Length: 257
Figure 1: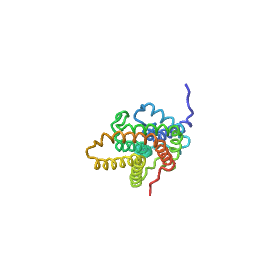
Figure 2: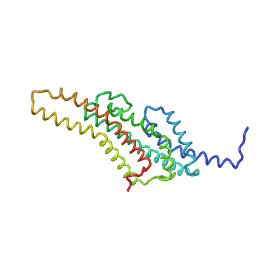
Figure 3: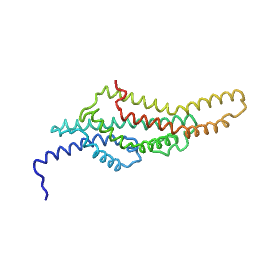
Figure 4: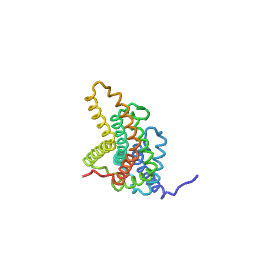
């Protein structure tokens, strides 16, 4: 039987508590991360990803010793989970921006009913395609490395056990949601412009030739235009989206007063 020296037991306890403290923030964030926190990924895989990130980040995270008081320990645990959820939501909003952009584009180009239930979330086919392509591009560009850097940097922004102020957190959350919807509309702008031009042209043709069934003539045109814009504009859309995602990971506090 192997016995540890008595002087090593406090160090072992502090090390396990430090590992657990890092795991709290990491697991809460991983559950909402793009690519790693999707619904289609099993819970065991997410747990393994959280453990892997924890082992990577623990040596760089500042040490925090165990709290002997139960109330302080519970407060510490809830604070770390809250910080992890907030950081994860700030990145999850980028995925929602892609899905919203795809929904706007699908509604504008009459493609909203094609393969609408193919994904875990009920989004149109364009939104599903943009989301899947965006997540694949982010992983190819080294999302796991950026996430590890982001988590290590988060301890300088949000020290361990220190909860953010409610007024700052609410203001920051509103700014993040506003930016997400603004980005979604900006990414879908080519499809909205094409829909506007199509409806104006259709209205002019209908006024000039009332007996013509303009809907039968215009529906194939707007469908082809939407597919062409999707083919030609997806590289630019994903480039803008990935740049904004990684810029937010470098400066997550953008929007704070």
